[in-house]
Length: 321
Image (tube, rainbow, N blue to C red; front, side, top):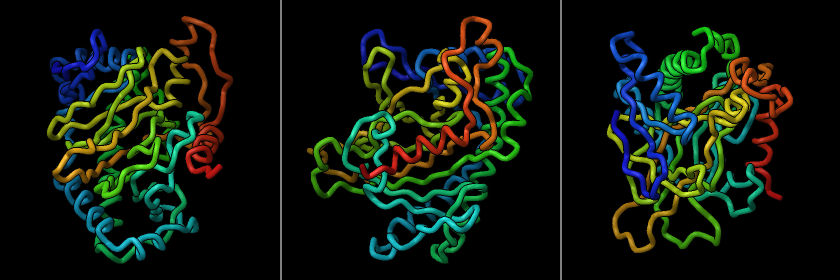
């Protein structure tokens, strides 16, 4: 297994794990599971290679979303603002969301804009330009569903559950696909304003396609140190979400992370685009301590439906108070 160099003394590195042996059922599959389990306990973050996600489908979504973001702001701000279409598109303009609010930290809105889609999530009618945007979202969403199912099986093996233990919870899952544009920062950010404020993700896990640029993803260790997530060509960043941390009775960690502003003195381009897939269970799924973790200690949280949990987190992130 490769590891990225740590930036803080004695801080655990963020590992890069080739998951192909597990997906293909070949020699080394058990090593993959052990590496994932270790990463989930230590940092809650790891990178995966050998995942089998289509490069062509990924590039198509990346490029079409970029075309949308290149449209004039006066046009974009009127798109994707409705909620009457299940599986429609939603657009969040720059500074519309302040992720730090979910941790009780008040900051200006994050310096980013995003396009959002979920099969069972409310949105608006899809725009006619760029042509093929909806199809690109749906094709990439399907790729992420496949990878997520492989990772769920690996989680089950690591914990000691039947391989299909979680599958019923994802029959009508509320997963969301987002393409985020971090534009050039032509003005100095407001005090406390980041590209994405410090936060944890809400759901089961997140699978992120990112790119190298000044001002990137940073992960906070349990000791409070910030690590730059490594950039590995073709790899995906995977992290545990809050719902799964509750399921694991806090043994697997949902780690605070942020997207930093680019250095003020940097003279080149700092535009950045990322594609996170937020794997979320169905609305009625009850999040409660899993049996293997409950056997080691009393449950720390009362059971809660995922629908109630996500409603609370979302209202915090978009609160203007």
